[in-house]
Image (spheres, rainbow, N blue to C red):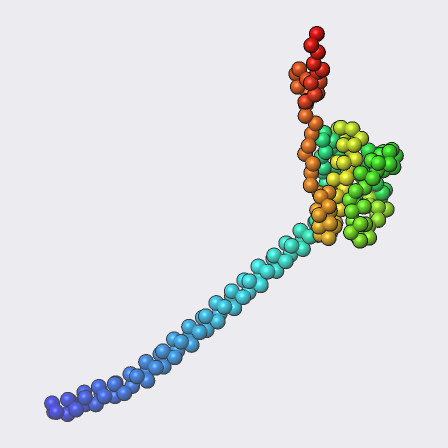
Length: 202
């Protein structure tokens, strides 16, 4: 009886040894398939998240562009003690302190100074017409020369906001840079900031 039980146990062990590698192979295949399925699901989820973020970004960009297009351009410029503010209007041409350009800058020299950006664009071969401009400018402080130069700088900034080509041309011409020079104040004991009184021996 003991010999038969030993033989049976040996046979069972052999059968178990034969069956175990097949079972382990099946289990590994199942594990690998489940892992690949999980990885593919994660990749799909990441793709969906990326698409959603891209859609949100494009929506926000479109909204910001629409807002910027809807907003009228508004520029400021200073020269000496003069301050010029230009605001875009739908109609009306160019108006400076409720006057036309020619009536406000009465000498022709100051009108030429005020329209320097337009001349620079025409010299560079760009087709730019003053009649297409619809702006209202308010200028305060300083004299007529300061008004003309501040208006010229504000106009250059306004035109450069329209397109990048205009901006490059005006930047090369040096019409966008602010000129911060101001007259030096009078000092005590001097006629002006540097001018002295005439020396007399007697």
